[in-house]
Image (cartoon, rainbow, N blue to C red; front, side, top):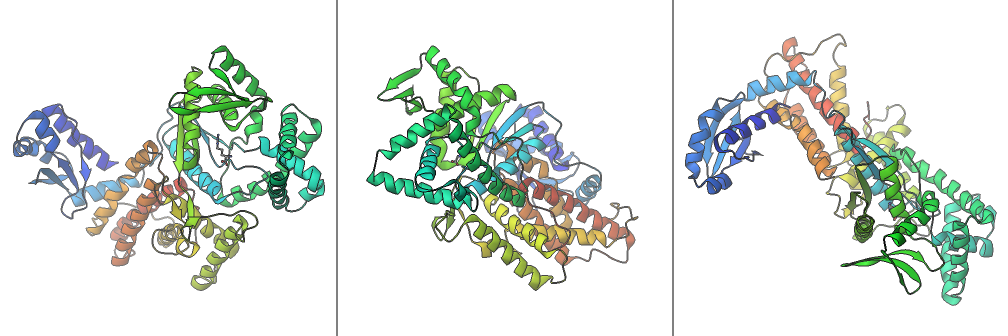
Length: 552
Ligand code: ARG
């Protein structure tokens, strides 16, 4: 929007005069809006800093929206014309679409959430789900075609163990109610028995090997386990309002693994090492491709999946939203693909742990806190605050659910993704501060202002309102830039911070001004400001995956 145009024109002035790409920064000092640091250009061109300033001063002053230019300690400081800028920006906002770029004809596949069947959906999988969902939206806005894949962990030796335990210590009807809890118990039991009786591991391996070779009985048990797990996972996806284009888990690649191994043999990159086949990777630990009995491994299935995605979807890039702890795995994956002469770009979008009271948060069975417990607790707390703040609200249950999810989503996205985050429901659910509910609440406040007017009233930007809307306008005009930055850094936290700042600037304007006045012209202008603010905030909420409410 306007500010980008201004920046472009400033850059052009420098370009013309010095063939130099000047950096233009934002300033949070009151009387300065934009600032150009002149140190680098001065050094590069060997011209005194003050002389550079003098030489561009008048050209910059002539640009539209620039009110004055001043020099201070190596910077050219720029003050914009607040009235003209605000007027044009809010006027433009009434009609201009924001955020969406034209299609760029590129395809990315994003692999996110990807929980393991027969296990609990962990709080880390929630983070992958929420981050992936947001990054998917950011890429879509940037003009990509985005394919969302849930790479379920539904294959591997653990199913040999599970089936062995089910047959030896349990029975099929353990799958009828709370199957995941029962399967987890069996899994724990297996490991206990294994410590006394190590040969059961070889039975489990044999079962998995037979499963990979299509044993009907084992396949039908495995299908049953998968079915029950998916029912449970869908419950979380529905709550979080997230969907996928494909649920192609690891098992999907079973019939593509032979090809991978054969190609590696032909390329002479597969080596025998003790009882396994490996690909050596110089400075990284070797990638384990298959065991002596022929069984595949996690990375083997990822290699097949990457090749499949790049061929089937003609993907330009493959994104993987997976925790920090798998960075070696994705480095190895990229390197193996390179060795196979595959021109595939892997991007590991890594993230940190969720911590509670200083420890890694765990939502496993056996602990008191299952994910269900945590989610229900969040909904319950949200409902309590509705009871206090707005007891007459209709459909409290649904609204509470949406507030609770926004609290969790925002908490997952508010910090840079690679950092560990703290999980404290009471803080996350506050209606003020950096929380999802605060943003939802601000959006509701904006809607109720807009609803106060007659629906036939056409908004117009007429008079210039007070000075404080300028800051709001300047912030709003940076939305496209924020989306681009979030895209180039795969960092939804840029949007969450942007939205929080927007809400704060808006609320301070709202707190200090009368928006609906006796003067119709002024009211229309004020509401144009509200309209632009809401449009921008709601776009941010959509990007973050936070539901927009009409009332709360
Ligand atoms: N199922 C894995 C886990 O829970 C995550 C899978 C991530 N995706 C992938 N293509 N490896 O740790």
